Length: 105
Image (tube, rainbow, N blue to C red; front, side, top):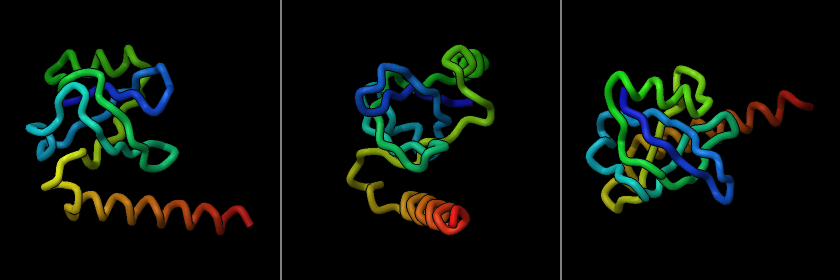
């Protein structure tokens, strides 16, 4: 398991997110990342580098995470900014929000 801790906006709490294999080389401490959360896509900044191995699970649980972790879906990187994975994540998030809006009526 590969994880990274992320802070969002002015929230002092760190949240654990799963890091997909294709993003591993690009994520460092202080990277800007796009995270899939229960509230939709949210931008944040990493407070750690990638944490791998058996200890990653323990770190995630220590930060109050629920397993399975939500993923990082994009980063601040010119080559990946318009990638199909990010477009798909944004589209899915939009569809989920739209469906939720119509369900409430």
